[in-house]
Image (cartoon, rainbow, N blue to C red; front, side):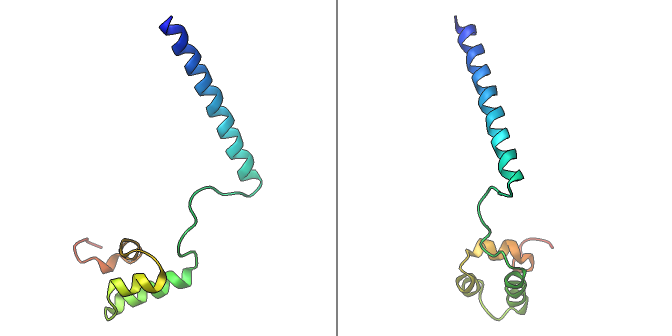
Length: 87
């Protein structure tokens, strides 16, 4: 009995997966993208952030506040800001 229920559950899982993948393909064909939108989508903003970090005058905390991102995002976008990580 257990094997019968397991087989039915596996079949249902495969059907659900196929439907999900078909829906994602359909959405991509219509030009939709999934995922969270980027906080800094413009290259100019990222370049400005990197320049401020490289300059070294403005604290990372203030740069993060200026662009509305976390300090971790600043460190990720400007690897030279983290002296502990090799570049």
